[in-house]
Image (cartoon, rainbow, N blue to C red; front, side):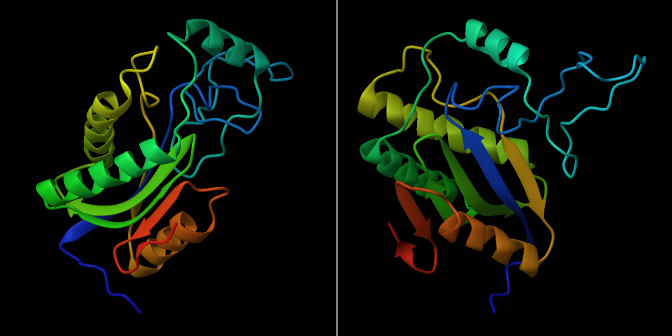
Length: 192
């Protein structure tokens, strides 16, 4: 059993590439849309679905159409070359910042990272830095995408509070992803 460093806070970070999982998507989405949906009772308060532990939003085709119209360019998907560059940059960023990178899986439309950083650094900062440096590397390698964005604006930042949660997140990232381009772990190196 691995005993994860206690002086650090652990996170499962996830983000999607630009335009590949829009609000209202049939797969579900996390959003703070306040519009009343068909079948909901009139109320001055609507439950939001944008907090950890809450169910995600169900399909909302009108919201998806509106999000598509607001896009600044076509959606972005990574290929193997780009995924390898992202992995290299994630590892470089973690090393430079002295964060611990435990597991990474990169698919054409999203990535998962299991990482740790000092307690004063929150998940939004971690994910933002990882995405920013990966974007710079991709811009140098591939040029800027038409949308000028590689990633969605935000992403999921789930804190992991104990060894069991970290181990489950590592297992999820390494072994539960469909069609990964690149999979890497600190203990095993590159798996795919």
